[in-house]
Image (cartoon, rainbow, N blue to C red; front, side, top):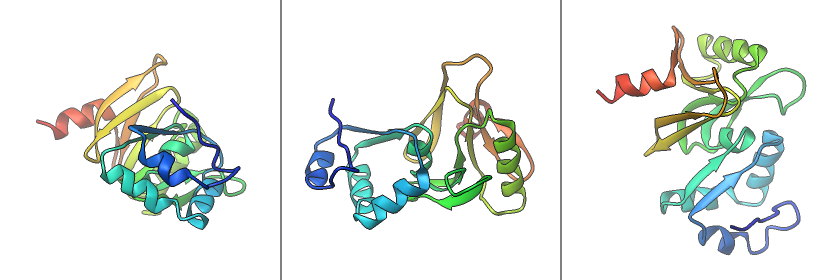
Length: 165
């Protein structure tokens, strides 16, 4: 296990990243993080290691960044949609157990500000294989993940079953 503090310097990051089996990105300010990645030409590096088989993971901002787009509170007051780096198709929101965030996410999908997507309560992890959700794990009773489209919200475990039959 190792840690790389990108804010200190990007020097050596390419070599460090290319030698990993798994990358874990923590939470924080998604807008700042993606701007920093773009300014330092890191998005292409993440895509390159992903395409070579490295597992990319994260929590909160570190999960949202991998999607086409996501709902965030890192761009001033309220929730706004923002583009991710596009390794996973559709939209995403973490912290879906927050009722205000959940309401805004459903509203944005209904009015087509965001495409259909995955919503994840706190304490829940979703495993994606080849870009598709395949497993859902929860460390908190009553917390889940969901597939949300313009018409409905479906428990992600049920959605996975329906789409794999």
